Length: 285
Image (cartoon, rainbow, N blue to C red; front, side, top):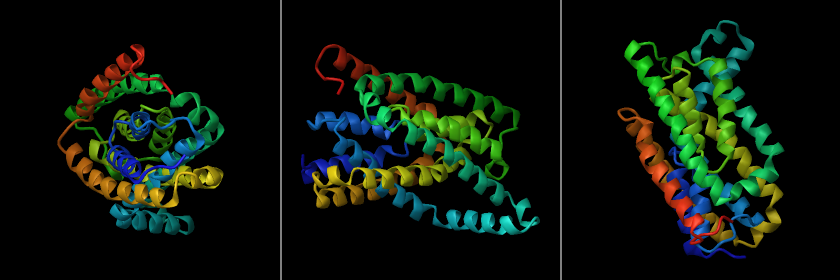
């Protein structure tokens, strides 16, 4: 199976556009692959889905480069100095590290489940709808804390915040949930303001998605050769460009808008997808 350049470009656009928006990149890629006539649960296709995430991750690294360096320096200094450990960046760095571990463990142990049965479009439809309820509840919780004036900023993020958000991030392994939708919702439930929760979501995306992409590259290198190296490169580049623009847009959006705005897209999409599956217009795999 070889991807055409047009297919690679389309998948790159979908990946870059949806990776960081709370609408589920995996769910959208699965739908798009199906519409393009690709076998969504084929090893090469599932591997390609993870590989092009590297373009989105590169966009994150460049966009947040100064923040990454700041946190890394604070973490290294804190390892050898008790005084440096009082810096909130040291605590934030540990929150990101600890929060990145659960999804790596669960993702590795449930790899066959994630790349197999969970690739069903029925799962995507259900997750799009059901996780929208969680996002709505998270915003309700955030609104209450905001009115009370007790929400926390990035400087108030704790190690426990990182652990809880990291555990919730594991739900994003289910196509249709959305990694950013899971982590931002968890941050709001923990009392973190919307912009800080979104930035924390980006920080946690770097180790999680990088590990997933590199793991798939090694494990599925033989299958990936069948897709075409040039097409893969095109997909990664397109994903990078679109993801960079998506990051900038989302940070501006959440500064003055609720994430429930995406619910009005997620739920109708889930319902339409379920109807198409139920009527036989589309098949689940």
